[in-house]
Image (cartoon, rainbow, N blue to C red; front, side):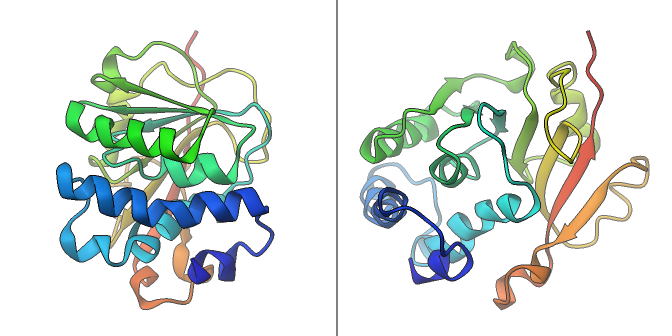
Length: 209
């Protein structure tokens, strides 16, 4: 929790309480349904919670922003961002039902009212979103294909509507066909070694009416 406060010192008491609860909730549920590796559960705040919040260093979401978290797994990056941005709405989607069982229990345990979950392939999700967020569930060309037609028309942020993707390593080949991407190195925001090769990729996408 100290790690979160180090980089997000202006949290409310309620947010601090919610972030603090995350560890016990995940420790408990991970024993029943494994959504986080044993190695990672001991470093939940470093490897999952703060990593998810890397998106918040790139983008401060305005109230009423609609976000779709694709392949959320155990609820990352959606749940930490939903705590940080309580006035935004988050739709967490995964094709594996047992993972969403954990997500639903964590959401209930935290009392989050701005999160909904759907057990589905993302291609079958209807609706438009300001931003689509995810943690490296597929190569960018595949991901772009999955979320086609899901970007909202109205622009309300300095960064254009589109994808905010947590990725690592050398992305040159993967992003060569996407000239409009901007890559943000998380090592510019977080000093821990874990973030040396971690990035947030922003790919603006146009509304397709």
